[in-house]
Amino acid sequence: MAVDTHVDTIVRGGKVVTSSQVMDAAVAIKGEKIAAVGPEHLLPKADRYIDAEGKFVLPGLIDSHVHLDGHDDYALGALAAAHAGLTTLVPFGNYALEGDETLDQAVRRIQDEVGTGALVDFGFHFILQNRPSILESLPRAMELGVKSFKMFMTYKKRPGRMCDDDYICNAMEMVAKGGGVLQLHCESGNIIEYLENKLIAEGHTHPTDFPTACPDWAEEEAINRAIKMGAATDCPTYVVHLSTQLGLERIKQAQAQGQKIWTETCPQYLLLSDAEMAKFGPLAKIGPPLRPEDGPDRDALWNGLRQGQISLVGSDHSPHPEELKKPGWDNIFVDSTGASVPFGSPGIETVAPLMYSEGVVKRGFPIWWLARVMSENPARIFGLYPRKGVIQAGSDADLMILDPGADRVVTAKDHHSNAGYTLFEGWKVSGRPWMTLLRGQVLLNQGQIEQKPGYGKFLPCEGPTTPLGGPVD
Image 1 (cartoon, rainbow, N blue to C red):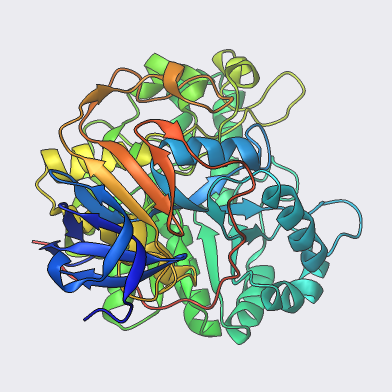
Image 2 (cartoon, one colour):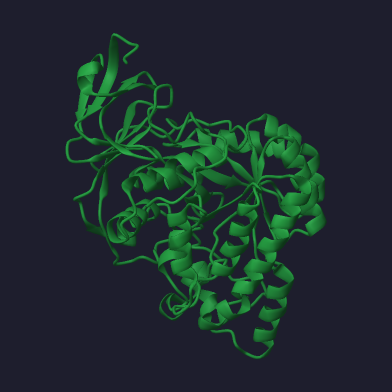
């Protein structure tokens, strides 16, 4: 089984978790790669042994839905990720809406910005704002290792965000030709703009009025268009932050017909509801909105995960500080200048513990489901597989060793984001990352970071590979 006569490190004694099973095995590491996986007595000798008895040994976790070009920069986001037990981030990059910066220039700029301070490995998606001329440089960006792009079907009040269908189709054709995947924020912008303006005119601007402007059928309508455009252009399509049962039903229909349409959801849509708007006010303004407390959506999303129709879970970390959201108490839609009150909430440091606690411990999902939705499937969809996301010979030696018995309480005081709050304040969670390894080196050790900023590497991404699906029961 072992191809080396000597290795650097062996992780032994734990339960090795793949995306489909749990094994009593050890993991041998040489350099930055996994050398072998199997019974310890069949592995070569090692310079260092890590005893993981009583713990789960998972592939390094990946958060593939992260916004770090604003109030949390790439260095701070990577620090938060490292403390949370993540080993790879795939954040969204942006280019200047004004001016003549091309996508390939933006890729190189952000590579330099991230590379100096990142503790974890990182790839990129790029947001294609409403500047159609930017598509001229899209093939060059793809040659540099950016294979996934995101477009918005909503946010008319946010400059440059909402994209017309013809622009989306043109982008889809180019992304498909280059072997990539197009991500879409699916809400019907024209419908939401109408409903929002109507509520403002009628004086219904309290935070609790916000979800009314973004009904579930607005997500469904946009998802329907996304599916049709993806089919027309033969482009792999990825629906971000799915929040509704209606939207999921449309995706399931397209998947059953063999279309390359994949989706994710986020802890906030699985666990929170519109009741949070009364408690947190504008801090809980996210897009799409939190759905009705008595509605069918949360149960439907959990079932979509259980049946494998929802491929992964990401945080949608978008950490606007509290002071920038405060105007939303007076008008949840716009501030005194008419600008949109910011959307988004922090999530890098809560996504993994919540999914383990609420999915595995509370709802009985197998532990290997966590490896599927937060390791292998993100790596597959976003072109990092098999380098990332799996525990197998030849893959990067990225491991998260989870102590299942370490319970704790979520509090923003322990977090590293500039947001200063979490919508999950006071939640009790099970499990804690006891240790992580990134490319063979210990990154996190019982709460302490052992690498220096800049250890993280840029990851050129390949095209998508079909994610794992099917029921997990």
